[in-house]
Image 1: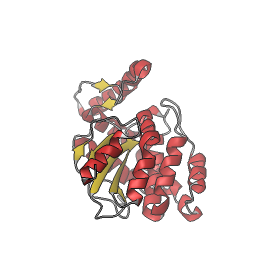
Image 2: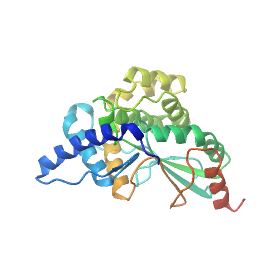
Image 3: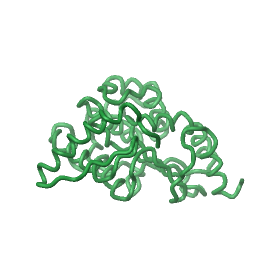
Length: 253
């Protein structure tokens, strides 16, 4: 995960606001720790809580918890054969620019490995960058669309995820509108009856819980990738290294 460069000061300022709001509610302050694209778990949890509290019940996050079909207890959407020799965990946020770079470099190879029965993908769509979308809660809205598709039209999950990254908005801007997300889903082959469910925001409580659980488990930023439970520390932004590591895990390299 690389440094954000000139955006670091702006991001630090925004994250400090979120952290101070939570500290005021709880009667204590925590230090803000930020390292480029890596956001420390305690602060991420504070952001999630801030979003839920600020949005209230109108955004669906105060509704009943609905678990999508096929999801793991750890908050992942599953793609591929259950008996695949490699379990690939991917943690991402659809607003995260580094996740976009990872998607462009590696998603094609991952799709091939899933299709070949080599990889069982466990996708964790997180939503901790809502505050970086000018109040539009883009991370949550995009994740909700993806989770809805995973639940009701899983064959189109990878296509929608790729489309969202191909049209990824810049941090600090409002992100794609609900209408644009719906349009991308339609273009990705998602049935209209599934797209029509997006505004119900059924899975927002599950997304919030899964985001909190991810950082409680030790995730410190996105993208994070694990191969059979072990963190991949190689180059995520160039095609090849991750595929080589996956092949090595199967003993074919």
